[in-house]
Length: 239
Image (tube, rainbow, N blue to C red):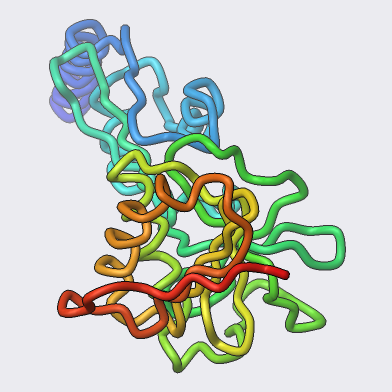
């Protein structure tokens, strides 16, 4: 009999504690930051399978470091309580150096040349700027593939180019090409040859200082060997 009474007391006490926790940590607000490819509602839905989803404490613990394999652009979602009724979700999206089109799909690659995501739709030109690259055509692409010439660091340099343009709020190029391991950008009728992408930031700094003078011209701006010590540049007009 004493055992039953003790058990009832424990159950009653546990129920009380659970009730207090449920009421004190009722989930009233979820904030979402860091998401570009998915809406707040979609991110919230990805985290909606907690055992007690209406409780902020349980919801936060359940989604502390959530991997979302079905969301190809997301690395993980992190949850943190900002007060007892609010959970902040921070979306860590994958970092892409660029993307290209092949066989009816858009394929996204990282700085190491690894294909890490695919999509049926093209990327929005809004932030973050991810260069759409022409000239990458392995012939047959699958997730996890390593692109040709990955050892040359060409994809890392394309990523550097994208970050430089985005962070400096520079004019987006009309097109980005890779030909024979070299990077080319086009702005109207001007094509900028950046070579293998070495000293990418210095070359881009020079390029954006030159572009206003090249307005209305048609030809190739040669920056393949550009360095801080270069005295000038070569512009070859198209015939």
